[in-house]
Length: 439
Image (cartoon, rainbow, N blue to C red):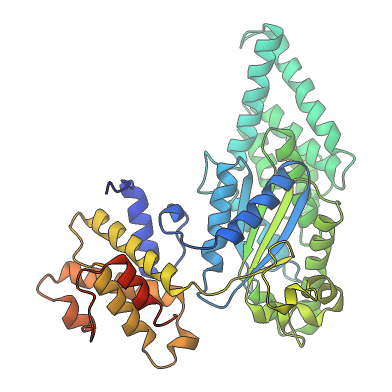
């Protein structure tokens, strides 16, 4: 069987990330297993968003169940489909609202991680603006027969910029947003880096006072804790107008909102979530998708989770029929089940190949050894409740590293032997052994 050759930079990212127990930002397609229904549901949402709609989904699962991996997978799918994406993890310093700028900190984090297909690692803000202006220049030259040094080119480009920005001015904060884009264009046109950088700082939420904004940009507002989400809606509209499919936000570790001890502060954050949810559900936002990862407790705890806020509970609680134990991927919450033993087996096979490919050796771990490793993991005390894909992966990567770096040690010495072995690891026998237990 011919194996797909994975570039060294991807195997490096995968091996390093998975060894450390963190989600890789690239190469996820090489280790993805299962989750087909979940992925299909989000891809349908993306289609709707690309057509001018909006979407909002909670992705819930217990720690280590793969929700962060799935969010990153969605992010990569989105970039491949020509969306602009941004991602951030919430923390005590980054919330949706706060009295110490925690909401603005989340906006800044999202803007730092602003990414496109050609800039997948973040920092894409200026690249997006430059691509837009270069595209306008190119189309103006082609349609009007202009040359790069023609005096009329700048005027033609300016008119086309105004066509886009004038459509933004009727939106909340749209006038100032459009004005700052014009300042960036003028800096671009005149080769004035100071004006360009001032515009970029404002767009990233880095100008601290209105006084500074008036002095440098002649606008009377700044992006702050209260209005940052309004600007995300503007970014979604803007990216759609300049040729992208829209903007998708991936916000993980929402359990940090659940952990806020002050009930008033916690409820304020839930109220902001409600606003975001209503905007996307009621058509008040366009070309915007919001995907939030959290634990089931964050959502369902009626004392301090989302269900403690009645307006959210009434919108998120399962219907009578989906609540009977049937899957419903069209609702606002996608609940992740743990990977099956078969899916874990396939994942470990993939990791074996990637590790061998990265270090350039013939793998000595086959189906028989993987089954033994899985039985060993599943046989631990409490593994049926505590074992997660993250723990399995970290242990398995540790095993592969140890075997590779210590060739005198055998697999059996590290893990042990099966009491009954499938002689040739026949696929049917593998299935029978996997059916004996569930991780």
